[in-house]
Length: 85
Image (cartoon, rainbow, N blue to C red; front, side):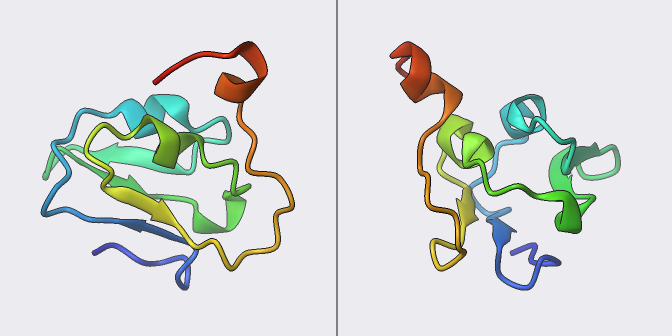
């Protein structure tokens, strides 16, 4: 598990396929691909806005955000436009 955010954002490398959808989903560029491992890394943990887009987009559910974080909304762009992922 990658956990440089103190529990806010974690990536399970055992189930991650390296598809990079989390990198594309992150609106503030927190997640980057590691060229050596072809897996995502949490490059800028302090910039995470807890928007849940990376978690929502991960097809293998390898990304998780702590739900103990104070963020009153669990509403994403997908909800706004009624899109299914």
